[in-house]
Every structure is written in C-alpha cells, then in structure tokens.
Length: 266
Image 1 (cartoon, one colour):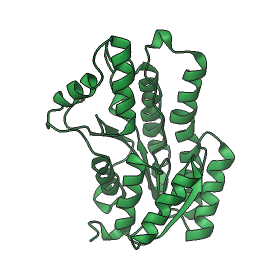
Image 2 (cartoon, helix red, strand yellow; image 1 turned 30 degrees about the vertical axis):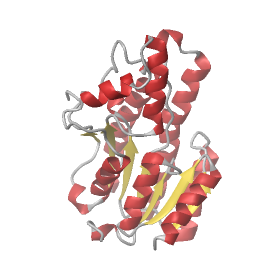
Image 3 (spheres, one colour; image 1 turned 60 degrees about the vertical axis):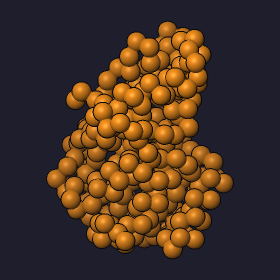
Image 4 (cartoon, helix red, strand yellow; image 1 turned 180 degrees about the vertical axis):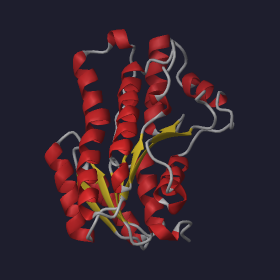
C-alpha cells in the first residue's frame, strides 16, 4: 500500500536503475503509484527491471541511456513525456566507483569518474529541470550522492577520486536547488553510507589488495563502525527518495541529507 498517495499518478525517471540502489528506487516509486522510466547504460537490464515492475502491477518503460551523452539525456526526457505525458520526478542515481590512491589514479580513470558521476548528473538534471520549468508545475530532482561527498574517505580508504566526484555533485545540487527555487522545483542530494551493493564488494576487494590485508576484512570493519549496527540496504536509500518526492518534503531544497546510519560527523 502506498505510504505517500500524492505520488500516485506522477512520472519519475530513475537513472542507473538496472540493478542495486537504482532498482530499489524504481520499485519503491512504482509502489507509490508513479509511472517509471527505468534507464541504464545496459539496455537489457533497464528493460528487465521495467518488465518486473509491469509484472508486479506497475507502469514502467525501460530504455538505454548513457548519462554522459547530452543527446541521450534529452531523448530520455522526450521519450518519458511522449509515453507518460509529463515529468514530475528525476532521480539521478547513475554512478560508478573506483578504488585507488589519488597519487596512483591515472587521467583516464579520473576523467571517466567525473564524466559519469558529475557530468552525468549535470546533463540529466539540466534536461529534467528544463522540462519541469516548461510544464510550470514544479517538480523534484533527487541526486543519489554519497557520504563520500561530504568528507575525505580517510588515509587507508583509497576512494579519493570517487569522493571528489561526489563532492562536485553535492555542490552542484545545492546551487541547482537555489536556481530552480522560483519554479518550485526542489533539488536535494542523499548521502548514503556503507551499502550492501556490488560497489562495496569492489571496495573491499581492491582495498584489501592495496593494504595487503585479508579480503572481507575491509567491509566487515566498515560495518562494525556503523552506529546503527547493520549494513545499509538499497531500500534504505529508496525510502529517503520516496520521502523527498512526497508532500512531507515540500520545504526541503538545496540540501544534502544524511542517510548513513550515523557515520557522518556533519
């Protein structure tokens, strides 16, 4: 049963929704009654998640989108509006990870991280914002950032390039929220923590290699540091997205909300 009935009848786009956090967000908004455009760089994954939503009684469209390509972002908006009539919610979730000390990060890796994690958010949010302004009915832009966008990961946590991309995203979201405020388009970022996803398996494996420790020890140690005492699930992020898309969040914009189990100091 929907927790936020006001979301019913809205249309939402979720980027990077072919698996993990994006998939959980797409399903949560679908359960709230929104029509969902599921996008992913992998067409098969996007279409598969869309079919799962349809099979569960929801409304969804699955399309391939490369968020680093401006034309793809524009076509994502136009196909959504052609199919569902309008756009109310964008969740900019697509992102990639990388594990390595900054001093060892090559230029191509840096450029790829910034292209997907920062430029991709810029292009998709820009296209969505223009559509929402045209509609004249407000809207919600929700960016899945990271706790790594608020603090330096740490001496023995080699996620510096990833953190830099997420710091960029949070700054972008704050400014965009201010610029779109006259249009009642609310823009907020979510800062998650240690989430049980393939990315954290990658972080554990690669960090263990760099530090010369046992595989599995990085992830287990990180989980032990969480004040709430459990690893975060993709659904925990999806819950915050649903809240930010609801009327209960009508007075929140240009913010970066912590949803990380108490890990962040601010």
